[in-house]
Length: 630
Image (cartoon, rainbow, N blue to C red; front, side, top):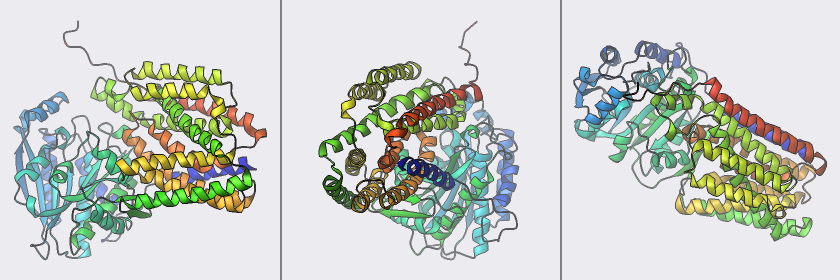
């Protein structure tokens, strides 16, 4: 009975997650004048992305002329600004095959102004960069952003005059160090008039566009985006975890420069189809649905800012996340403590009822928490090993071409890691104490050696996880013995992690507190309706929470893996733990355990095979020649 509910819940959660990741259909050229149309924007993409146009190239000058004419045709007051290209940026361009000398070591920004009815009000900037790397025509990065900005201007004009002035800024030399943005935000006369900025970017050739960065102190910005962004076709994809993670990464975009000056704003990009990043990025390969999603969000957000009584001011940060792209839920960081308290109260209710009606013991709750720790440790070992089957970690890539090849392998890596996490979850649901503990520990030690050999022995997290995984596997008596013990133990572990996150990183704590609260509510309801966890009154709400919560987590995890999965494949293990928490009470009955565990082993082998196949699907280019070699 429970096996049916388990497999059904997992299948529906996967379906919900996949549906939440779909891009909207591109609007045609006949779309209303006030709406964004990807097909209208694609006309500009095709014109701009005929060939690579890095700084200093002949096509770079051609694109400048095309854009200035397009901006003037849209009624913008156009001008240009020049700024120096630093020596380091010039050297970087030269190493990529560009020619900074041909550009006279100068970046040229293109600026267009659409005056508002009240010039005294702070203006809004719409920003994208028009240069490319030497090896790519840049249909996605960033011709799509430039074209989306032009189409946004056209639609805003069709909606009628706004009070605020719109500044369209097409920066130069972003690909070699954001040199154009540094020039504009360094000393341009318009700089101090701008109160908010929207930047359009890409790190791939498709997928949903994500709002992944804001200005600091973003509560008012998120409130505006929550109202405006959901009007975009396809809704929004955004959460405060992405903002928190991106701020701690070494990456930067043109948005980095105004953000450092304290300007509020939004940074939007799509990162799907990573094989197109700085490579085969042509208009024909570009995902038009991604252009539609990027441009629709840019249009609705820019329009809302232009017509706002007051622009968002810097204040407190918000905790927020979209629910399936349709609505954005946000709250102050301190509310996380209230959610944690509510989840603990619901968990206590479930424990009280299950102790009285189902024989739950606190010792088994502790064993359930140890199950979760075992899952995390083993998951880190296995996903690291499976990831290394797809190729070296990025710090060992010996050229830009090697890095881009790893990006092209990323979908295979994600599939391999996801299957690995699924297999591990199946193993725990079937009972991690059932296989011979010596065999399990030996296999895990072997996988750890494989991962460390291929990925490098300097990873203390994997080394520590390997020791914990092997140690806990040799102690099968510490595995939970009842469904209630395993369930409440996992809820307690997740809430404990959530409490730590709430203390040190409240913007990221929702990842644990929201699912933990959902699971605690399901546990309390099940404990009241059917403590035996065998009848529909308890199985239905458990299945519903697992489907919706699991689907939301799957949708959230995909862009996170695309962003950091190359070097941190274990991020899916955290998501897997949260999904496992939701389905833990649906563990298969004793009679179905053996085939279930055999299926788990087959899924694990499949995950390793899928990840390893990436080497054949996307071969690594030849290693660069060593200078002075014969």
